[in-house]
Image (cartoon, one colour):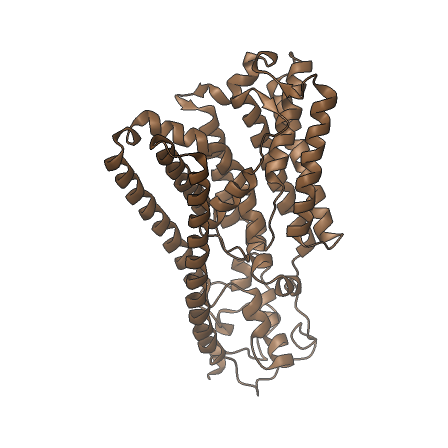
Length: 420
């Protein structure tokens, strides 16, 4: 291999040089948001210790970066195509399905689901799961309704902030149990599911005479929050759209979003890359809880009659939307667009079954079958993706700089360290 393609002692200073390339373009670690010097110093340090790019391959998104992105786009396009096919089929069988009013109802029905599912998407991408989001929605909805009932002149913005705060605090507690208590996420959030549900019941019994808040107890300004429209767009759909745009940008274009994918793909490699895995996990659960808290206020505003059983089973619909949307239940892949499409798919199927006169139990059966199908398809795609990544990594390792290239003393590579 020519010296111009490898790391030369003359120009190596721990920073990226075009002639020190292992990949075309900018330094991949710089592009991925881990700092301009990490990848190039890490290549030599890792190779010196292990003779191969094992660490670098684990913590960078190439050589499979473009392939992984292509697979993600393929999944989203596939879900969209399947959704369109279902809409056409449903419209042929039930003409009432294909109407502007019905589509509006579907969007309204899935808006709350989409908001909570966006938070769950980040949790699942980070190789975790949150089973408590349904209980957070129910608890937050009851708290918001009681606040409005007892303080009718309280500004709606304060209620929204309170919902975000309550949900964020409960999500933070989940994160602390997982990161500090080192309890597996599925166990920790299963426990808090029942804890938050019990707290919901206690608050309802102690703060309301019948354990329920009625629509006449709520102010019109509060109920308008989710039922009114702005510029012709129902507020509920507007909230869901804003949340979707914010977190599409967060996951795709911010350093924090890339860290979520890194933690979900390989937590140990992410830690070696300088990512604070515990902090990232904590923030993911906090944001998931906050979005569930936001949805809880909108839930109370839309449905008005709030009991202590609100949100029961909602977490299953949320997880279904995320998994159907293409997120890998084992972490490392997924996206907000896919999740929103998954929510639309669930909403369309549920609406069609309701128009057909089938019971809600059949809707649950269909949901379960769709989840199983989505997991099977995801497993098959991942098997093929892993094979393709192994081929690409093998090709990259063939381009390793020659072993006789000398790395000068005092550099990060010579010291066996790499700055994140």
